[in-house]
Amino acid sequence: MVATGGFPYAACGRRLNRCVFRTVVLMAAGVLVMVAGPAHAQNLRYSNHRELEIPEYAMFRLGPFYSDMTLSQTAGYRYSRGTGAGTDFLSNNRRGVIREDGEEFPLITDIGLRNYLLISRRADLDFSMNLRYEHYPRETQEDAFSIDLADEGVSADLSLMTAVTPFVKVTAGDRFLYRTDYVDTRGMEDRYGGQEYEFFENTFGVDTDWMLMEDHNLGISASRKDHLPQLDGFDEQELVAYVESLVYEVRLSPFLVLGASAGFAQNQYPATNRPDSASQQYGMHADARLTEYSTARAHVGYSLASTDGGGDIPGTLVGGISLATRLAENLSHGLSFNRERRPGFRVAFETRDSVQYNLSWTDVDTAASLFAGYSVFDPDDPLSTGYADWSAGIRTVFPLWFRMLNLELSSDYSRRDNDAATLDPAAGIDDLEQQADYDTWVSRAATRLKLTLRSDLTFSYEHIERISDADQLAYTRDVVAALWRYTYKF
Image (cartoon, rainbow, N blue to C red; front, top):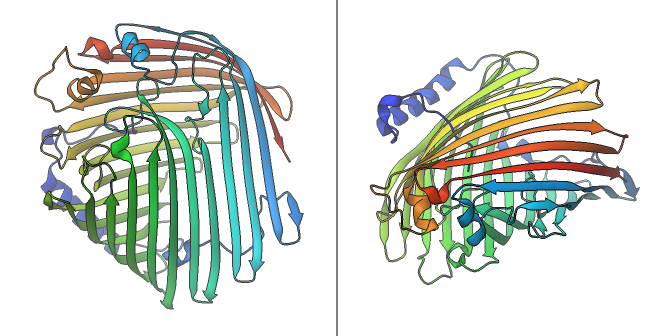
């Protein structure tokens, strides 16, 4: 599930108070305008395009072509065991990444490629790919592309950047992705209890920014996304989406940027039982550096939506505010409050209200982080039930013996609260996931020993426990592993 966490205004109950939200957003926008003070400069969107220069990562050069490649191979031993009433639904319904208990000898290969071509003084081409493949000889888990890293599966970015004039920059890019996720009935990630969801996705888009005059930028973007599920049971998720946006930004001072934007989206679903949909959103935003160590962003707008055959969906206010502060040299934290309307996994649209907090500390050899948040989802379909997710977690890494041996600890707790009025014990798993409340606790401890400059050995123990008022969803799982990894950078 998406990381979420606790909400401070308990009097509002599960449904966030819309009036309070609107007041907070509007007041926050005003505060940003008034309190922005001297510090580091804020940038327009124009500066987001990459610079035309030789990349630092390049290890190989042939004329104007630069390249870098990293290969990593992992092998070892893993043992898993599951208990509880819910293990029947995991096995019989083919749920979760681990399909069978017992011993396993995983073989994992990671390949990372970065390629860059400097075409001229005003144009370049960047192509990057990350590939991760996992093989399980004893078939306790299906061979698949990885699902547990930021660049999981097969992903690639192909982009062309050109400076048409000294004041106009255009970036055209294509990103394709082939991946296997594990998701619950509503499409939220559920690694140990979700359905296997294999899909191919390709997104092509163009971003253009025109510096009309000093500190004034006009941005235009357009993209097309094709989303193609590869397994039966997910026909409703096949999608062709077109997105267009227009934004105008003004930098009033080196520390404050204001902007206005308009966005449009058209979603086309080939499935006959899912109507096409469209949305529009108009808004304003402000980015400010409040102090030398604090930044803030606020946005407020209005969203309109409609479906074919279903007519217009009532408009809603959207917006949010985020604050980030560096408390000390190695310590920082952030708080965000957001309201958005987005396409749903099985419904046309859903409105999400969320508040999130994070705290992180990093040093040369040590890192620690804490997060918490809370999200409420309100489907625009009257036949679908709403739900709320909240979770909190902590993660830390610190050395036990110089830089040769590290200890890694993590613990994540999440809860799903459904708005269903009744619970039918005889219902199927998909229905139970929309009716029953359940908690999931995932804790992991690992030690990583550095053997050589290119290899390390990791011993880990992971415990997963799910508690629910529906016995069919309750289970525990324990996973012990010893993995050796070798990494070579060409």
